Length: 272
Ligand SMILES: C[S@@+](CC[C@H](N)C(=O)[O-])C[C@H]1O[C@@H](n2cnc3c(N)ncnc32)[C@H](O)[C@@H]1O
Image 1: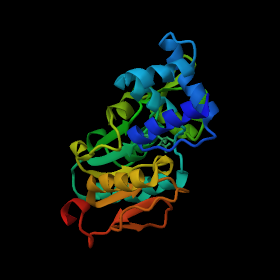
Image 2 (image 1 turned 90 degrees about the horizontal axis):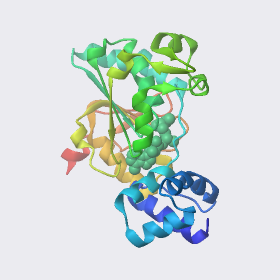
Image 3 (image 1 turned 90 degrees about the vertical axis):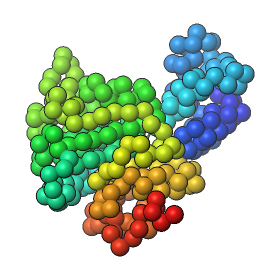
Image 4 (image 1 turned 180 degrees about the vertical axis):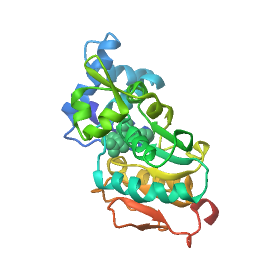
């Protein structure tokens, strides 16, 4: 892939998803775009990029951008974070009143994070009180997430055996999430660069291992959009090792990556 073609794709990805692709990612991007070129019956990735350059085809452009996004994920990623949600945050929210607890998995990739949230929530809540919304830019990742089918390799990455036996059933040589887990999650194609308020408000907003790939201005604006959908007594969750700072209204907790809104601070939307 020529530096010029890589720069073209990187600029599309920056504009449309807010994500930075670095100059040393040529092999990664070419590998990801190969299947799209073949599906379009084109000889090479160079031809695919020429086509997008000359036609500005919006659907193809979106597919190219989605293909360049890193989808790496696993069940119970950042184990201490999910332990805190299970042992402290969700039981506290659940004891508040009888309303459903709403959780957002923003940048859910192939679903492992949202299913982990469902498993953790089921420890203290009955299914009707769990409402998880999981969104991503990538339609392909969401398609896999919605099926809830994972390989041995995928379940071995982080899923405790007790959770596997309780929440999955074996389907040939794969594992499928049980219906109660799937029913607590609604999946949606949504760009984090767009307004999130149509999704409603959430008690817990998880945006883990997403914003560190964003260019700084897009990350800052996305944090404000996440803030706008986080309830007054809500939580924001990022990757434990990420250096993401949520808006000033959020205070850190003893668990790295877990932040709690302080009721003394006004919401961004009401601050004007
Ligand atoms: C590295 S994965 C992280 C998955 C999961 N949150 C976790 O921590 O395991 C990043 C995800 O963010 C998604 N993403 C990147 N930019 C996005 C955007 N602008 N809007 C929505 N999703 C985006 C990617 O498609 C990918 O699925």
